[in-house]
Length: 145
Image (cartoon, rainbow, N blue to C red):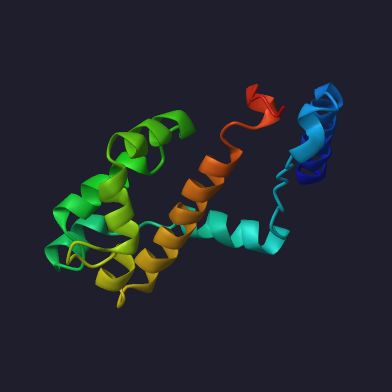
């Protein structure tokens, strides 16, 4: 029920933003609407977020590095604004963490034998993407015109 209400509110926000656009500036307006995942996927993601992961054990087993763990903890379970600031302050290292590069393995390659870590990092990556796409929405007061 909340998801439907949130979707309706979001659609109303976009409609309201488009009403305020003048005809000249609205010529190339692009409206991005999020597609909420099915309830089953949301439930699965929440289940994965709630699972305890032995991060220190993964470091001791050399599955991930201590530096990787510090990066993960700096963006995990923090407010969206704090996460955004942390990532913006060191974007390159977070790109390397998730995608690899500079002769370093991505977190997904390094933890390939740990499905719990892979699943958690996929959900966290989705949260990062969702946080960046929702940043600057009409609800946040962004200008669409």
